[in-house]
Length: 365
Image (tube, rainbow, N blue to C red):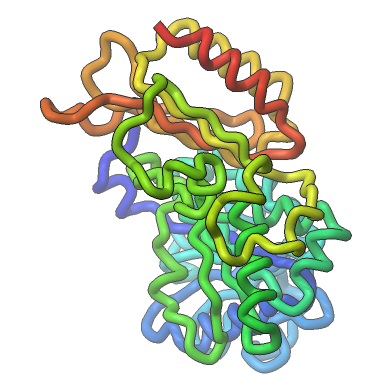
């Protein structure tokens, strides 16, 4: 487990993803031109027609790593991402290149999962780079249509730590809210904000710590209200010990004004559910169950994260995973006045919520 000092020394990495035309490259150009005094290495997963090179590059060259006019570095990944990251590391350690952070721009059709996994699989990379967050750009005007037609777009939303909605000015408030609600159901743990590329606050995009286990597990209140119509009014006492989420069953009576005909129809492949309990887990049973779940459903699990209450351990355990890579570490101690409890969120493709819920319940003491 790395301490704060180790994390400070590591190079933070942001993965920027989003569908074609959503505005990733516009955002990236803006970060590169405006983020003064900081040097960023940009890795492009492939040079598409709208890559950065046109206005910012010093010269065209066949080399994979090019210095930009503002001191940032830009590279294309024609080979393997791991090789490029190790190459950048070697050249930075040798003093040939200076950069303080890395942004990886994926192609419009890419699933960010394998890119995230790179940071957990290779020890050299895991020791040198710290994966900060996945940022997904969604186009307000075409987002609904893209989510309908492209499962890759749903995956990009499911992996995100932050979702930026571009072109909000081109749609009505009702259309925006419908898109936002749909994104919340796909990924209730990402913060969602509209973005005007001319004035996005860059500081809100870099240093999100989405993969840092110590960050709070925030779940969008709209998602929780949808699961438990009563929870919106009453956060304090639940009569039964653990409450489960029946995400789709409450379109009729959730008291949200924008639950109209739009969104009952979108049965997305990617979705989320939350498991909560006030009872403690048996650590061995839980480990065995999660290990099995990850083996079977790993390819369909995008992101999962939790704060766990384990029997015999007086502090919370924090755990998270991407596909089949799962990690856990101890968190803060439970305070004397605090009621220990578990909260876990799973985001993935057609996950059998019943199997997960029943299995987790059987791991409770």
